[in-house]
Image (cartoon, rainbow, N blue to C red; front, top):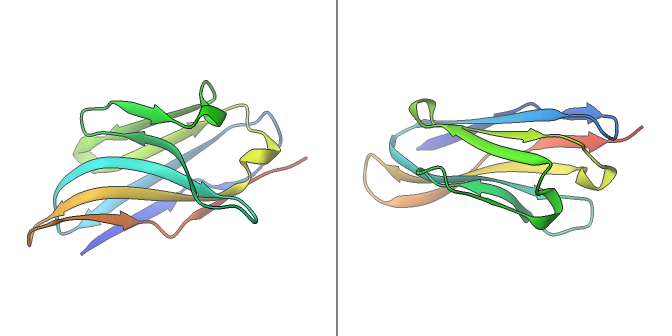
Length: 120
């Protein structure tokens, strides 16, 4: 199957920066859209940013101008550069990928989540 492994979360002060990475591996024929979602305490999971294989991007209004999503198609990896972080950005961040697997079929896969805490 397919595994998504995230890294880069942690504790940062307001105004600081973090860079998240997510690498997809396994029985991959092709990776289509990749994205980052987050779930804050007591909140529903929400889309943060997404990027197609053709590198078109989409952002939540709350992060526009502060976060940048990018990808390395050769390595099936997606990144999220987060600048000017605010306490309200505190959440577990999940990577998502839409993948055509070798055995056939197109499926959505999720990473295990990485904690981002913005606090002084």
